[in-house]
Image 1 (cartoon, helix red, strand yellow):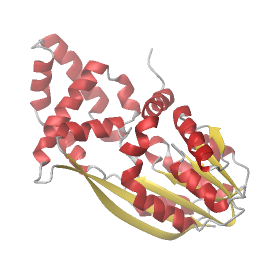
Image 2 (tube, helix red, strand yellow; image 1 turned 180 degrees about the vertical axis):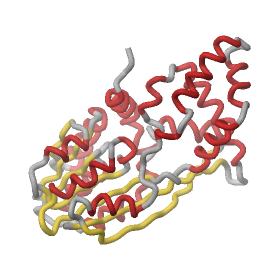
Image 3 (cartoon, helix red, strand yellow; image 1 turned 30 degrees about the vertical axis):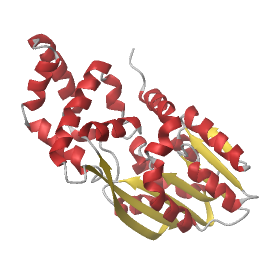
Image 4 (cartoon, one colour; image 1 turned 60 degrees about the horizontal axis):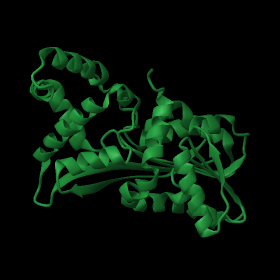
Length: 296
């Protein structure tokens, strides 16, 4: 029986929760600090942190608004457990809610928050419909902060995807992977083409204008936008692909249909392909990030 997509995402992020900050959060401290500063949080305010993850920024915001309230929302129980432990260590109080970000904000009472934070979660929800909903939960004078990867993020992986889509190389390597079994090669190749033959799984915004436009539909006015690129370096293509998988960056519905042996083949295929981007310092991966601060 196939795992439903929401269960797949939950399982994937439960798996990476303990290592998530070391794999992901440490690379994006700059844009996160800028977002928190841009929200202009004040003591006594009520804040929602949607898709709060391990709570590293949720707890920071709680320290800024105490004795106000911060509500951390995430669909991964593993992430919420990490957030709870972090808050306890810091001696701060959080209200943690196990829910999808989109469900929580859709059911939030009107004008119930002074600020809403949504960081690196747009790939996992229907952001075109969710972003306008945030405005209804914001009080007059309230603020919203959104951080997201854009479609130009990790261009190296996108280039490899396009290259493999046009090339016979994956089929030949799959033939070797199946120990030259024509039947098994054809079965797996057809399955991969059905799953990944069209780039419909790319769902993040292309730029800050798209984010601002959707927030505006909810009555929010953009105050600040920015974009930045963060380059990560790896010693090998294998390390780069392992990072992409281990930090949850490729956590997508399509992958629930890929069995472990085929997943290992894909990881090896892309790891070898990443070597074509090698520079003197190593293998680069570029994160393209957009930030938006809006207000009512």
